Image (spheres, one colour):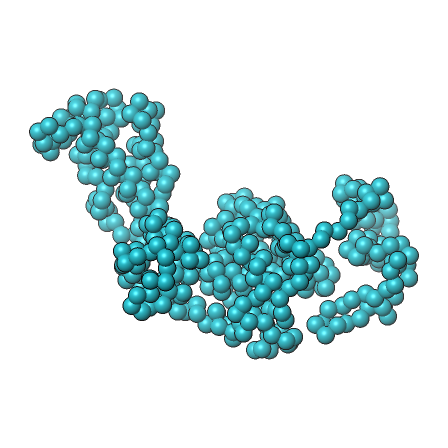
Length: 422
């Protein structure tokens, strides 16, 4: 979300307690009784029989509501405590009172979740209808009379709240309309042609880790995924991994209206269902075409259970790496499995290397030139054999007998090694 500064220097923001009210509250936190604080600072406002404690409670509720209106639940929590804790809270309260009036008014963005802006009852009704973000609400809700009748539990009052919200923020509708071409078939473009709007490029992703802790120079999700793809030297691996990242980013933007780094586990589960049956077909599915063709589509059909499991495995690996680089905080694909996909039999670990042993082998291979006086071409050949054997899982006999003539190109442009297995 963006922020808009609306408070003039020295003025009191709407809904914020005035100076006398704050002085009374500060006096109470400093040790005055409720009665003494009110009599000293608010005597002229106290009605006959009115509770001094109730007046101070009202001031605290004003501050809580103001902090909530600025989307600062951490500051709202400062004022929510038992009276006995006021002395321990005094410093935090004083800091919060000074900070709150300086906070800008939050401005909604189409990638925001609806629960940041609408009432819980309205949010529950919309989420039950599959609407979770403002972009989904903007684009999917028809602008006609009675549109709300199709959403069980929303009602006229909730519909009026939604309409009033969008009337107060017309830029949301304008931005959503600007994004609509992305959701059309001609807007589904390959990875190298992607130009992401700021709202969904991940620069402000919901699950981005603190920037100063990240080991990547990436400022958005596209750049972060590019860094991940660059780790893999083989063109085939890069192409296979790019395809999965490409599909997910396009789906996240077009179908969910959010950035890759804003995806939740619910989104990952929805994506699992989507790859089995990509819909609408005219947008997502088409025969193989060159990547620069306007007829290019991410899918040639729904994925099998095995292919879907592979896709989720690749995406989970991507997010694990992004977590390791401190780019994101969570992996939405963790634990998301594909029903009907039989896992491979367990390997005989007595005949394979442990992860630590493999890392040791790879470290030795990386140092062959300067530690063991190997020539660079010879070292490169050995590293290729190690990586090729690791990536393909070929037996020794299969690896020795493999020749370039066994590598064949399919109709999708992918290379396959053909061999006679055991």
